[in-house]
Amino acid sequence: MTRRRFERRPDLRIVECVPNFSEGQVKEVIESIADAIRKTPGVTLLDVESNPDHNRSVISFIGEPDPVKDAALAASQKAIELIDLRHHKGEHPRMGAVDVVPFVPISGVTMDDCISLARAFGQEFAQKFHVPVFLYEEAAITPERRNLADVREGEFEGLREKIGKDQTKKPDFGPEKIHPTAGATAVGAREILIAYNVNLGTKDLDVAKKIAHQLRAKDGGLAFVKALGFELKERGIVQVSMNLTNYRKSQLFKAYELVKLFADRYGVPVVGSEIVGLTPMDSLVDSAEFYLRLENFSRDQILERKLFAPKLSTLTDESLALFSEEVASKKATPGGGSVSAYMAALAAGLLCMVARITLGKKEAPPYADKLNEVVMEGEVLRQKLLRLVVEDTEAFDLVMKAFKLSKDQPEARKKAIAEATIKASEIPLSTLDCSVRILRLAREVAEKGSTNALSDVVTAVSAARAAVEGAASNVLINLASLEDQKYVEKIARQVSDLRKEAGQLEERAGKLVESRIKHPRIPA
Image 1 (cartoon, one colour):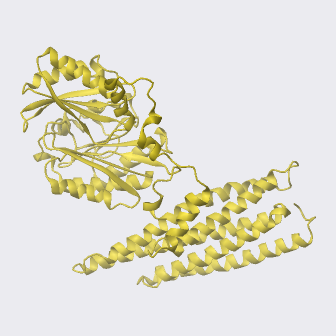
Image 2: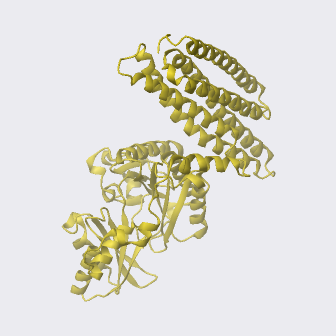
Image 3: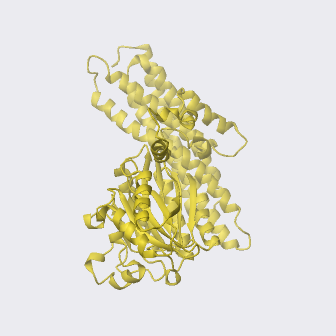
């Protein structure tokens, strides 16, 4: 299913990832990291923010959990290739080339989901890149590591000496030694954070540090503010750099007003402020309400809120129509593989419906346990097939990408094409297997389901049978281009066996339905 058209659906599970990389000066490096995210299917790059004084870049992107994890790994690989912390200098504390990787719940996911995602990412990251990983914030395993500042204490140079010797610096994942060029990485889960900086008209760094000390939560300031003082050498000024970890309780205008109050005490002017990366609209509305002294103001008065509010629509308008439009377009994807998976998902849904209708009768039907098993397995298959709809399109896109590789390296190109083609055959093979499992369920429902819904069973069987043939043809067409004959013969046998079984199951289900229509007193 094409991501471009479906990314706005309100039922999608959206996670934001906001990794911080220790490079804010070399544009080519920053762009290479960002490009790794752009090229990952299923994610949308939202923002790239770089600061030369901090020598740091903050990149924001969103998507469903698995694609977001893939994009974060791709960006990390590029950063580890291109950034050498031994030559890195900047105002901002850092301990890794990939310094911080937080996952933020946005829509349809919980904080627990992001905690699981962060830990899975951290483990895979450490294994793949041999970089020690420390879990922080909500993902932290121990309370002592919730605070990022405590985790990063000592930075790259200090941790280089302590990891492997000091048990308090033992990583959660990865080797007990720092990576020679990439350092260590903090991986976490947190709520939406606003990075907010206030610039002061002085070169005196002590003033910025004193204000940061008075402002931050751990020293008695605002409850949800972390703050540091930095020097902006290029501009000849200093800065109070803040993270607002709960912008609803420690609002932007409160942070600004406190900085201004303390700056006035030191006889220093505020010359400007900035938001790094993205911020929720509500955080700016809070400040507008405060400074404009608005009375009886409602968020519903915001024009954009009305313009971009989700519109109620029918299921057909929101899903089926868009999907059929994409299939009918001139693009190669989504194609027959995705359509086969979608038909099988609908078949599974119909069988679940018939089973539930039968179970919902006033008197408990015979074989209730069997019908409950049908519902449970049918729902698992339906969800898996919906994922296969998307995965089939992505697999085809990877094949096309492999064919576009430079012909100057024929062996590497040939290997990439073969690997992508195998993947493109495995996805429809999964669809084929699921479709046969649905036909097995269809036999149970044909025998035990309500006679009033037998026409739905016939529809489900027909859809699943069509999915079998569509998926099988997609597997075989991919096998035709592979040179590994052992693999080709093995998969071809599986396809043949599954198609044969599908034909037998279709015939049995058809006979059961026909018999029960003629003799309706058979168990209903």
